[in-house]
Length: 129
Image 1 (tube, rainbow, N blue to C red):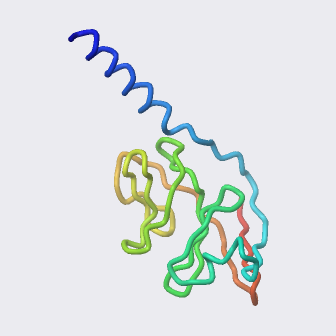
Image 2: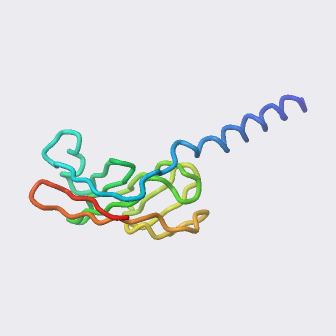
């Protein structure tokens, strides 16, 4: 019985400590444009839509576009936009950030990077350093 508990504990720790190593952001300078008429970017045409491109989480909410890092500052897990709460969430540790990347729920204590998002016609420009 003790050996089964030990095996379970080790398996849990291995899974828990490796689940947040999906990818580490390598982007230092950001400067790209998304054509919103392209099918790959269709999620951004609807209000409350979001997608990840170039390691940046891009969100369309309340008739505005927002862009933040797509990786949590706490455990390097991929973030997702929750349009119901207007918050960015981390699936690994339940961290939450507001739409501007400011920490709203621990365990994260460091804000995520925010980028500029400007729509001109059908082109959405994402910039920042």
